[in-house]
Length: 490
Image (tube, rainbow, N blue to C red; front, side, top):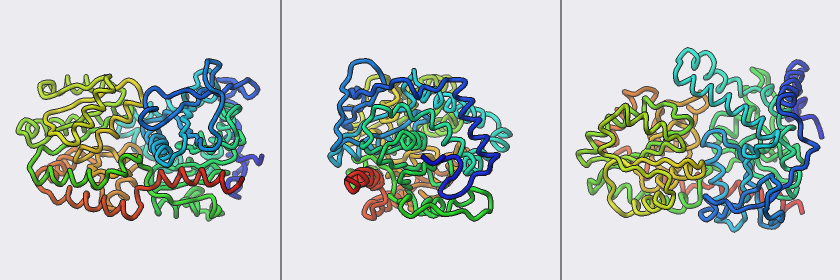
């Protein structure tokens, strides 16, 4: 196999950057070992958390009991890592779409195989990224001088991809005993790169966000993007080597699909938007959904939103869902900071059946007060937002992967410069606001939603129109692309 750290889509990497990439791999190998020659038995087990909802089965790398057979006709691997909620959310969208299309989704989390070099390498980088994210929220200087430039320009360079490709060689062994003709959809670049290095034959690399970066390149796969802006940027590898004009990606390596959205959300767009409009017309409490991911970053913004909404909630003009994911401490901090919050709140903690029951009932029943959700299991923590999204009127979120979901959105300040382009895209297609970069502008937008009907109505109309245009069909198209790669090359 061609050394993917020396030449990227025909563009040569400098000797200096190549040596840096080699040193990166050697550093991780010294720290965690190289288990390329160690057995990696692969078995299939039922996913106990979302298996019944999305038809998902897990691929485990273990000696423990499990089924070592795979459905090589209908099976498709969703390769992912637990690095923030966004990549898990894309994975769930792919699994949902695969299930709806009649395929068997296999969940392969490369950050869950504790005894492997693969997981240790991913975990170390995940810990570093999480630390940087937390510091960036506490230090404006660090954010301005280090974090924003790294997320915006550092990850954009081909030299960064060269190092990632070398590191991915240490991740490839987990695919050792997985059938090589099973299609793979990578919802983070590392599973896609690892699959290519392992010799998997049919790999699709589902690229997130709307800011083209070399970080997301996995040469040898079909790259999919959610926007036409991203397509143009990736096709010419725009800005990935300064002002130098690069060789473009081959036409068959890149595909625009539209947004990666779960089947159950896409199918119900018209009904859910109509319900939002009816609640507004009938003067029912306006429902806001706050999603607090990561390590609870931006708590000061969420606290300000909650404090602003509490009097409106008491007056019966608003209702609030707060999903703190798998970070119970975030909710505890909010209760300490806002003592009045406890009296209006109902906690839905660690009871997955009850959360599903509430979400289903909220589609038709009236909702009042504050409803807080916490689940220690990451599947439930992430998917709770999906369940609540259908019955909310406005989703309040930073412009990350949720920027692409078909629900009216109020965007708070981003984390990392790359995220701002998700808000720009959403505002342009009319299903979300501009990025509100400080608390006063966030509260101003809340007031507009509450006092007027224009913002909500316009977004609902645009969401229905966008669906008719196929903008939210990306997950279906990614899955079908993966299956077509196999079927067309038999």
